[in-house]
Amino acid sequence: MADDNLDRPDGESPEDQFAEMLRNLLGGGAEGLDASRLEALSGLGVDPAMLQQMMQQMQAAFAGGGDGGIDWSAAKTGALHLANKDGLGITSGNRQDFDQAFSLATLWLSEATTISDLPQPPRAITRGQWVEATLPVWQELAEPVADSIAGALTAAIDDHTPEDMKSMIAGAGQFMRRIGGSLFAAQLGAVIGRLSLEVVSGGDVGIPIMPDGEAVILPQNFADFGRDLEVDGDQLALYLATRELAHARLFRHARWLRLHVISQVTEFARGIHVDTSALEDLASRFDPSSPDELRAALESGALLPQRTAEQDAALSRLENLLATIEGWVDVVTADATARLPEAAKIAEAVRRRRAVGGPAEQAMGSLVGLELRPRRLREAAAMWRAVTDAVGTADRDSLWDYPDLMPDAADIDDPGALVARLQARARGEQPERDAFDDALDALLNEADRGPRPGAALSEGPGDADGPEEPRPV
Image (cartoon, rainbow, N blue to C red; front, side, top):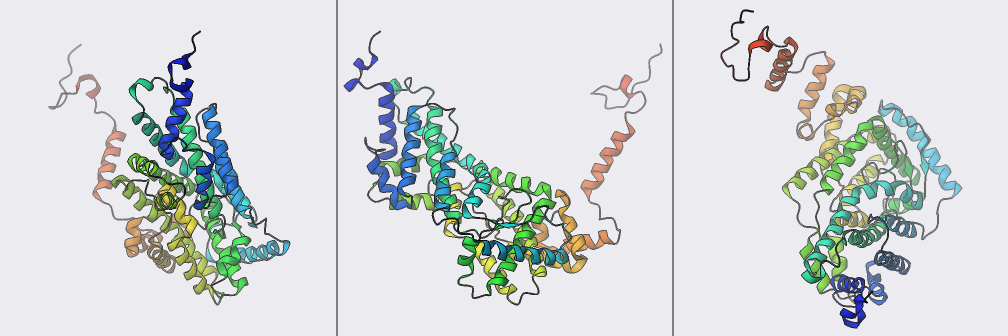
């Protein structure tokens, strides 16, 4: 058999030429993926161990194998490395303090809401345990963006491949998925790891990232949150424990709500596409000795194009949904912690923190293209307060029994109309009918009556003048 390498410069195989082309594309030069260039990326906040892991992921991708899927183990390893860098950080005293806070918060919540308690006790967990518990949800939310990055890299390779070489790299799509997926997974792991240093509780980011029915607090981050508040530590622990329990109770009571939130997030994420021209432009002038431009592009989301009209609509729906959820949590927590002298001060600090977000949460927004902040939180809380004052906690909480009962954006805009409907329902009055209701009833009644006598025998699709006379037999 003839040696195919004899026809190519320096005896390079097609695989070698493809690898060289990929290096040129991603690094702007023939040495684009060597260790010295990757070492320069330490300016991005990625430690040497994670850089070495990235190299191993890249080498595995070049070596081939696998099914072309995204290897999320890189994200998990990187996130746990950052989360556990300061040790476990939970003492038996920490656990006991928060156990007491959760016990008292459970009693207080029983007076503020009719939604039942959790089946399992809340607990204090480490940052590493938070990563382990929440990573499956982060993967689900990030996968559409990872797919988009893999697609952008595949398109870039196809556009930069000469026609006479395209036959050599046929079927390279799975290979590019491994490359793009490995790079994205490593970046996602770094962001989740940094986020584990900021979050205080399971419901801190607003979406249901903890397993169903679990309420948790991270003592390692609790002290950092309260350091500048100048409030009593016991009061802060009680407030945060109450808020976390309210959040977990709501999602366990309304089992449909978790899927509703996640589906709206993924609906938005599926519309995200990487700006291939921006990716190529950045790679062409990337200077490893000065990674500030790359860091700015990643943190600002410059590689993600502007949102489409469909994405803007999806984002608006999601923001209203998150505001409706957290507004309820705010009101219930305020009622349950009314005994705490500094509850109002803590509540304002929590609201401001949710509105601004920490550095890692902002990085997650840039990476995935989504900011999980309830911009209408105050308006939604005012709606829930009006409902509570008007009809009480039982009727208020019954709005979470079914998806079609939950308040929507119009109710946030006009709480008075929602209150009027609830008061009418409490009096046993039927709600006012509209044209849609009348049309639907007419359609259902027509279906119930069935076909007219003789219609099945004589009436055809074009008979506009009524049935014909029956023919004699």
